[in-house]
Length: 64
Image (cartoon, rainbow, N blue to C red; front, side, top):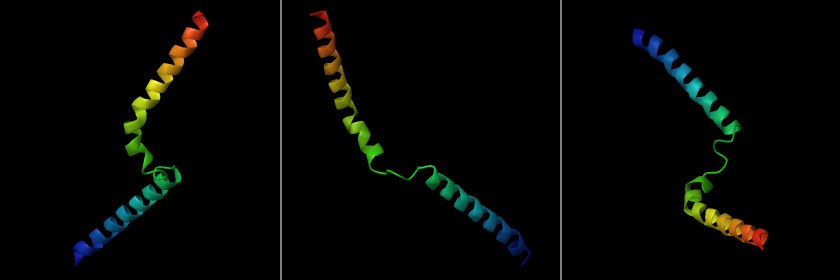
């Protein structure tokens, strides 16, 4: 019975801690977008290639 008097407050404190941390993360935008970050790496190279092509075209225009 004595262990319940110890475990109950500890459990409640842990639950309150996780609840507060969840609300803090939700408020800061941690859970806003779940799909894009995992797919962004698949399209990252395309963006770099497009930027490189545009930079090459701009540098060729400046030389002429």
